[in-house]
Picture 1 (cartoon, rainbow, N blue to C red):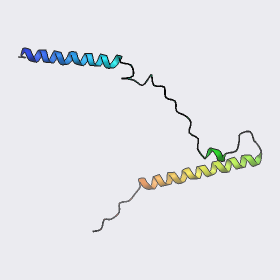
Picture 2 (picture 1 turned 90 degrees about the horizontal axis):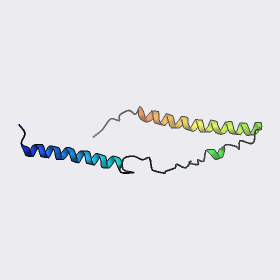
Picture 3 (picture 1 turned 30 degrees about the vertical axis):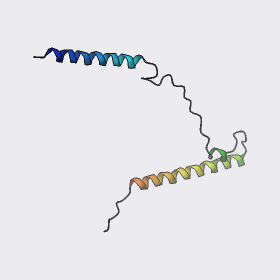
Picture 4 (picture 1 turned 180 degrees about the vertical axis):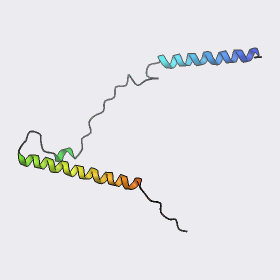
Length: 96
């Protein structure tokens, strides 16, 4: 069956594993990120600067806002088209 040194070695490994898990579980900051205090600051982009202030509700201001939004949608559409083209890339014939 098992030799005594094999049983002792197995029990030693199990005890060390349990003690290591308990140490890892109860050590603050080792097992979770619950105590981290990181805040993500909002990123200012240049596209927000093109939109008029929300206080001005005149027709001209609304038209300017709509054109700014249309321009941003066009940019996103061209970016999306570039991504689609790269996903549908055709292999190039290799020459020697």
